[in-house]
Length: 302
Length: 289
Image 1 (spheres, rainbow over the protein chains, first blue to last red):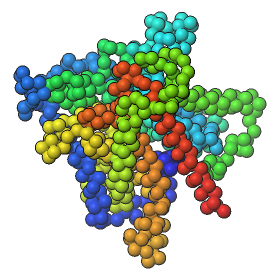
Image 2: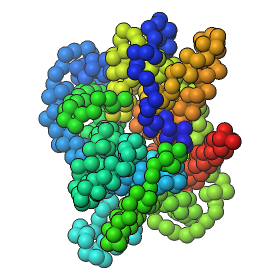
Image 3: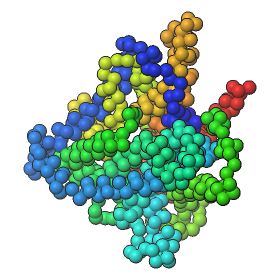
Image 4: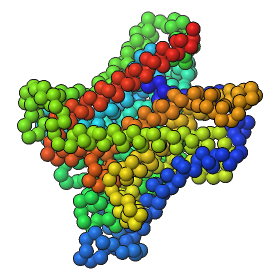
């Protein structure tokens, strides 16, 4: 684990300024070429293809056959017919991201400042559940939140659950999304807190700031790069996810990921609109990421 | 762990009043207790997966019906369970190997060289990580079905591997890059001063130093590949991986045999990680002596 931890976490403490150490050489292109080619052929080209598909039209009467066209109607349909799906995706993903932040922060904080020799063990504990299949764990939530389960029974007993159900509601979907992407929130926050000097935080206390003020003015700003990376790493996959909705959510009121998946894989002739939906989703996310990074920005994300 | 030991603890720095100390104790332990609660929350579904692998279930495995060993005795009894596991392991091994090699080369280029197009390369590496899986899956499906069929590619094992190498690559680059950046380049300069050629310097000095980063990246790549469902679902055709098997089965009710396999993979992975940790600890303590 320490390998992973160090790779992800180690600050570049002792690196001299880049100008002294980097070389100019054709070797760079040789090193870069195979990987860049791979990304070109299997990432960039497919996106170009997706863009052309999103403008295709279908042959009337021949489901599954399309012709090259500039059919903007696909985008109109994506933005009007499926606007509620987009809205749900972003609201559920936003809620899940916020909840994941609230749950992840104490854990990341404890790992960075309180864990001592238990730090590596806690690190393993954060990653370990993810070796059990993602789908199996999501399915386990459908057992945990089932009407016969102890969670629902306890809440019912306390009269805290007016509807009597959690499973097959949006609450279950948000709970599943929060759970599934939690480590992507914990690890970056931990990484940036681990670089912070705990004495700076203690200084806040020494200067008679109370816990909350110290947290708001000292600790949180220091961990901002991690919070930023963590929210992005949670929000992006959550907004595109369809598995949590499929396994935990209601029959009606799906997210945009479900529509894309069904249009591509279950409904004949769905390609162009599904491609337009995918492109719109990607564009929306890139715009949000851009605005968000500019608002709370740090210099480097990668 | 060295970073922890050279930080002075607060108790040696000053002596706070009793009231303050009680407050600190509560604050300290409150954070630690909530952290432990979060860890329990993370493990809750794993515990359910384990418990329900013993469920003597009928058609669906949702409600507890009674204890049985039968799923553990023969997890391959369910058609497709073990076949899909073997496919997942093969896909994971090949994708990890290729992505780790290509990604490490890219990371070396990105850290150690200046060249025209570096910013563009950075974007090319970053954007796949910021793209939702469903978009990548959809894009790959359209090109495999409409574009690459002309050159004889059809959906199956090959296309799964192509896709997995692609989405693992960026994560490998980022992980290895961080390791190379934390390295002091003067060590390599010293090797060259001692008349080591570029190849000798790389294999005898650089490579052993970045190896932990490469292994970490490989582990990350394998776990990403092994657990991927969304992209695989788009590009797999009739081929089935373990996550796809579980997902397809979930419509009828996941058989407990899948829980057996999933939980066993969890145990194996944890043992490997803990083992690697112990080995590196032993090595570190030997180096100190």
